[in-house]
Length: 451
Image 1 (tube, rainbow, N blue to C red):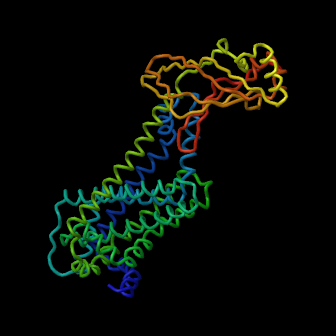
Image 2: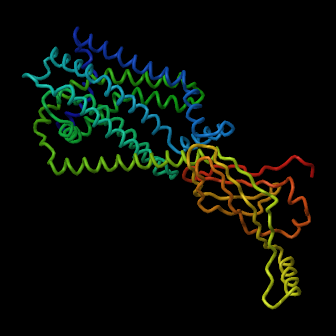
Image 3: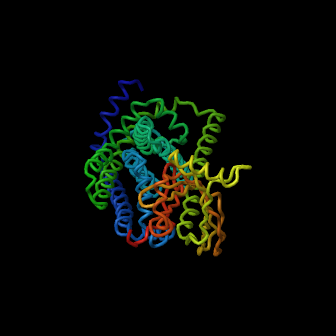
């Protein structure tokens, strides 16, 4: 098909709905009711149990008094991703779920429509149902791999990568619609997904034009949701799912018609070379494994760090030690006095402070303290920073470790005297929970004594 023929086919595809006969219309209604029921159940579970599911997850990850932290972390993670990518991922995810669970109904609808409208001559020999299901699973894994990759492309804050992720998410959403609904009529002629995808990609205008046309309800619903963030979760799910069902139902009929138009071109499309298929399969598999590894590593890291948040921390101020500038060799007391005077005149006083930090792990999991930093404030003034070396706290055990740091103080700060050792300290341990995101744990908080 040339460019003109592809464009004409896209414009004529919606008219395929006018060719529905009694049997095809019955299967269309069954498909509509099944998809609506499926999405209603999923949507209801999300809306009715969002708080309990969220709280159950956060309760596992965090102690009771740190549940607010989960919301902060979740908000941070989602804030790093474009809303366009998330909405398109939800639309594609809905399509994949319906395809996996309702593909036998979609096949009956497509086959009935083809037969009643005599789209293609001759008999067809469908793949066994188990093979069709296996093909749908492979396609679902491809979709999952693609959107996990797009997620990481858009995770970086650079505007170019955000834009690239948004464009890719639209392109893959359109591609998903085209492949999912053009394929059935071709699969009934014993064409595998690899050959179908090759044929579709050789006709990009028909492919992405068809996808854009029937994904339009989901895209418009997504744009509406972006423009109205005040909408409730129920309203958002209702709008997105309803729009997606509308696009899917129409695409199932129009895709059968368009697939029949592409059938001659598909027959002329050679099967991908076995080596090409193998290389693409290995590439996709490696990409899937890499994505699963990254997401799994984040899950493990969050698991370990979430248990750290359940640990009990205490700083023993009785072990506080302050080391003044060391004596100069051969200088004795006068040299120390001279060095201290020079330090005071220079406007800074270098000290080394150390104390003992005790960590009790009441959980049943071993925890590890990895990337971190410690900040020490007095009132609102930053006194110094340091870091703890990697610490492992076995399940149910308590360990103590030295917390030491070098300080540069303004000498006038020393006039606070004993108050430095009382109620104005704030010691905060920051854990690296996610890239560029440090989560605070307050080891010591300011007291309530009067100044």
